[in-house]
Length: 434
Image 1 (cartoon, rainbow, N blue to C red):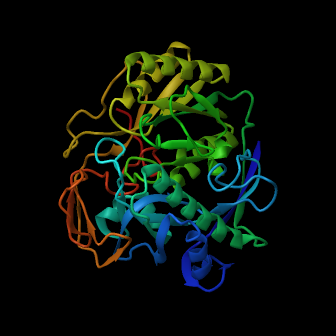
Image 2 (cartoon, rainbow, N blue to C red):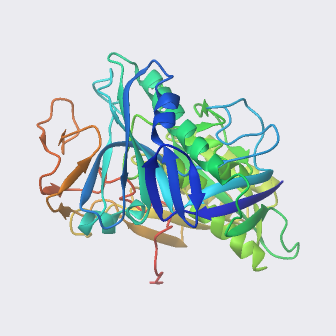
């Protein structure tokens, strides 16, 4: 597959009565976008606001973040299986609006009251320590603020939020039709045949018993599946998406899947001739039994061997005992002669002195840390609140006390900050060997 991605940078967003893109300035038709969103009867209210870097604004109720993209010819379209038919993507031409995002922020209470399926939302500060903690503070944002119909179940709520944000993202990207991009980058698995073949193994925690498992492929939630071979170009066109009722700092947003830093860098290393990008494997992790964990690790390593991988970058998303599969996968790959490097965030506690990883295998002898999830952070008082919630719960259990969203906050982890954990190393500035 050959995919050309045309880049149109955005430095300023204006809410207007028409659509226009010119020299980094994007104007969107607010009323037209409202009509698009409110076609869904599950959404009772919708409005738009814009925020910029360094603005003393705090965004609340964040469920997902997406980069506007569109395909302007052919049968395939971005976000297949969610806002369009299941047609294969990863070929042809895709337009992207870089430097900006659409943030989906929604008021939703949920029907699940306990366990991993409980709805959660995140927040984002555009200035100060909170901005320094998140990769998303550097962008200009179009914030889509929603209120959902009361009594919606989690799956319906997810589908409503996702449909609205994706339709908005696609529509505003279409404004670039006929415009000249700043650059066009080609993505193709066709490197130096003599270079080592490197695979990207992506572990994905899933919740098999919940209405939405957490990660979807062409709109289909990944549940009790073995390892799946996915062309990395499909990520760029939005074929892999996330659950939008659980905004959490250590979970990837749709933007993260679209801009997966390890996939993008493997492509660039391939262009430089240093390796050949073999492909990407999505591995469902968090099986309930050690038997299941051992089987999926074996299956993933066998699939990597079948595509001729000499080496593999191994990474994951989630927390808890899902990390066991990650280590078992490294062991299984190394036993087959596939050299591995693990890319992972650490735990470590408030001061960074506790155990950084939950489980170890002796074969994991090349590890890249992307930073800590558990470090405490102090957020100053905000001058402006954008989003559906004027009050927030710092503690996430149902019935927890609320505090004004504009107040100074002490967080004992980065979970509430969208993008607060650098799960895949996109924000890393240096690496040291010990």
